[in-house]
Every structure is written in structure tokens, then in C-alpha cells.
Length: 303
Image (cartoon, rainbow, N blue to C red):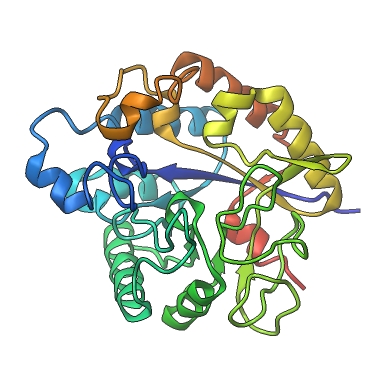
């Protein structure tokens, strides 16, 4: 019997892309453009840990899916090209990491036509830089709605990996009770499974303990919860079906990030990053080394 697979993904974004700094209703700067117009300090905390990420993946012989914010192409010359040259899949993480739905109200922050134009532009930018077709999308900050999937399919994406059902939060505009951890075909206009279309959703894993579902996809939760909890959720999710894991290069950055805006009120947000986070990520990759795949591999496995 064939083993279920764990899609390994890397979200390429820098410290200023988080919603406390740019791209949300409570950001210090309304968008990335305003950030660059007003920020006169160091901004590139991404290049060095991305190079380290590529080294780790090469050492472990892993091919991953890199969900990249398209504006990275302009501000970090050569970085996307380097990722693609290493044989990794390039996917889209939005044009500038702006939340498409409001984190609080879950209402659209961007009109549908504007979203369509943005993701089309982002796809084109990443395809030109990587010289490969960009088939996958992950919503910035994980805020996603069913209508977004319809537009993604319309402009040529084959899959999305943004939906996270758990007991701690809901970053969508609907109830997620029908969604598990295995890849599925979403209905038109909804995030629910049961659709009939050529588009796949790869949801995020969780660790089910009685009525509680702890989110265990990775990302900042590797820093907050540690590898044992994340590993338990991944193991349980793999028993159900294919699953996914992700992390950010900035999780393993050794540098201290600037504290501006709401980040001043969250002094523990970047706790356990750097060497600690790198060790946890490497241990998780080693633990599941027999299950690893790209997101495209998993998306194409849907019957």
C-alpha cells in the first residue's frame, strides 16, 4: 500500500509582510508600497535565511514548494531565480502579502476584480522570474474565502493550500466543520469539499485530541508549540490522507527584527526563532523523510 505523502512548503516573505506591519486593517503601514516610501532602515532580513533554507533542503535531498510573495522579485534580485534553479516548485503567496479578507470581520478588503488583477500579475511575475509554470497559491496570512478559489481557478491556478480548520482560530468567512486534513475538490463559491472541478485544496493538518483540534501545519507554530506537538499532528494527519507542512526562512533568521507598530506589544512573537527553530524544522523533516513531496505532487494525486 502506497504511503500518504507530506507536502513540504516554504513561505517566502520578510518581517515587514506580517499583518502588524503591512497589509491588514491594523497595520503600521497600509501596504508594502507605503512601507518602502517611509522605511529608511534595513529591510532585507530574508536573503540570508533563504540561502540557509536552500542549503538545508539540498543537504537532505528535499524538493519543496516555495510560496513566494511576487514583489520579492523586484526587491530581492536573483532570489526567486536561485530557488527555481535548485529544482524547487515556485508557487504564489500573493502580490504583496496583503490580507484579501479582513482579519476581524472576514469581509473582503479587496474587490474581486482587483484581486483577480493582482493574482494574475503575481502569477506572471513569478513565472517570468522562475521560468516555470506557477500552479499553486497560498493566501497571505492564511485568510481565504471560497470566492477567492473560483478566481484562482479562472486565472489558471490548479490548487490552493490555505484552509486551516482548528480550535484556535478561523481565518475564513465560513464554518469549516466539513473540512478535514486531506486534499479535496472544493465546491464552487465555497471552501467545502464535494466539488466537481479541476481545482484542489490542500488543507492544513491538525492534532485532534478529543474535541480539540490543535493547528500543526508549521510556520510560527513550530516556534510556539515545538516539534513534538507539530510532529504529533503531522503523524495523525498522515494516517488520514496526504498532508502538508510549511515554514518561513525568517523563522530561522539569527537577526533581531525591527519592532514597530503592533509588534511593540508582542515581544514574544519572535521567541524561539533562529537556531532553535532551525533545529526543530530539521528534526521534523528528518522524522518524515520517507513521506516528503511537493504540493503539486499531492494536488495531482486527487482521484
